[in-house]
Length: 349
Image 1 (cartoon, rainbow, N blue to C red):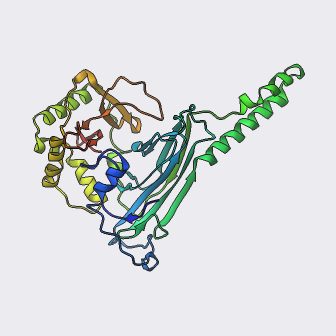
Image 2: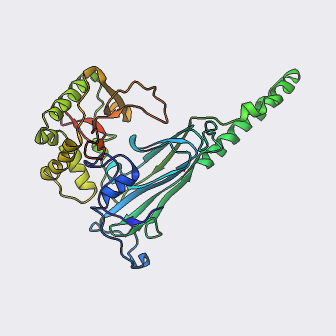
Image 3: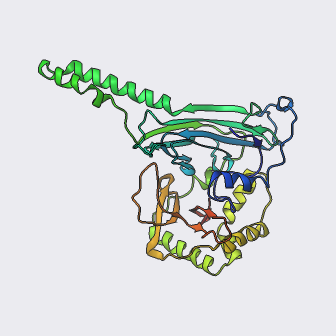
């Protein structure tokens, strides 16, 4: 796990976050103070009961041997496809709901490092932790308070045990003439296969809850209105109307400010959006190209651009709604999650 100071911004979706972990970390470095060499053991406990502290829940993951799609409270956190391994550590305050936060992981196959075929569940590796840090703590060390840890292989082993128990019960109750046939199929009937799903739940009482804009948001059933709204956003993008775009994502901006103890406003967004314009903001799509993906049972919807590829549960396809051509050497992108606030559709994440 890499070491950085706990501070600032969270998961992908804050304006200005770019594709790829190395680039993302480079961008975050402008918000994270330079590392200091003092010992972290002198810091106050991360769970100290004081409202003045700036606290951050971090999700820390290390993966390999499979494709992974990871969400927290149904919002994208990480997509990994490398057999060799990928890692990510990021604050998730803005996605938390106070109680019973749900981390959901879907694992599927990927090409082996030597290109000899697809990986199997035996190859899949995912370990992780949710950790609470104070601002200034060194993440990736013992400075934070460990909230929960998890390991995908534990889930795979439990699934294998369940299948074996079911097989033994079936074998025991089978007629004598069928027992031999069933015994010959033991490997097939007890094998764990992809996709493999894993759910981890935890509470987050030390930071603000955003349940109002997440699990408590009203359900949206009018998908035509959602597509109309996406067209409206696209037209704002085509006109490079920074103020208009900011007004549509003001709720998101306010939540991020609250989650990460910031006070950023329009000028910060305008400066960020200039990077999108300079990199060639893509608006080359029509209404029929717009895809919709329901989140939180239809309370939120991701709007994206269809790319014609089949959708796998561990590898959702589609181009992010805000994405650039990389004309300045950097590809910028941002997911767009739409909800209804005070009766109006807007960008909430």
